Length: 78
Image (cartoon, rainbow, N blue to C red; front, side, top):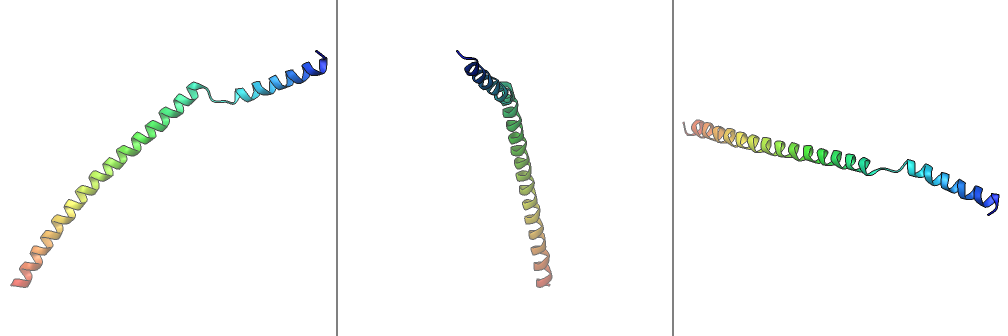
């Protein structure tokens, strides 16, 4: 092989190696996956907490509405 062809091959190999250095490894992907799963878990927990709070606030609102109706009914009938 000529020197010129070997230089071209070597240049291409070096370029490929440089590109491979920037690729994610399996461990990088595992870490990213674990972080995403953790974020999703926290989001689901937050959603559940907010759902429980909403139920509690609705019950409180309903109780207050009932008390107001009773007070208004008592005031009107007197």
